[in-house]
Image 1 (cartoon, rainbow, N blue to C red):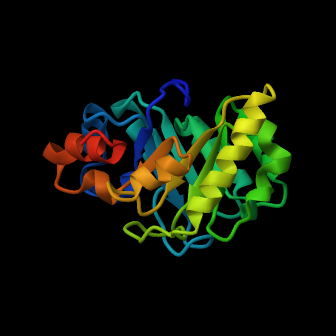
Image 2: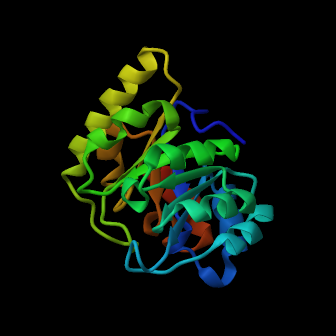
Length: 230
């Protein structure tokens, strides 16, 4: 798997939630060719969040279409029983919510024991301090800048302070010899909000609607604009 900390510039993870589901393989290939760094895959169960998306079989079907890291965000509860199926399906990093199971540390241990990168996803109302006791177990912290469950929502301004607070924690952790941790932001990211999330400390941006708007011919320009190069 490619390192999640391979580049100095902000990295873009298009969310296939906004892709054309009738041709997901083509869409994944198109955004990869357009300059994406990861493929972000939102898994929703209709219980933890009010929407239902895809399961491991779809992730497995997509895996041959792209060699970019699959960044799988599990919005499901209970979550532990699905960690191994998504790992076997081809996920490279698996992120879960602290609220999705009783033992966050154990869940992160499980992900790592499966040979995958482990992430923690924080909802808008989830406090930053929830990660303090598991910093040594995570490779990615995902800040939800909308309430999870649907694409196309408006960026929640209060999450900029959360991003800044997490960046300070990550910097202190790595300065003390800890492993690299990526800080990812998901929700309402476009060419206007992206620079603010980056300024607050984000180094990975999830963008669904802003990436897939306009069809495949627009994807490269969309990604460049979100990254700040367009």
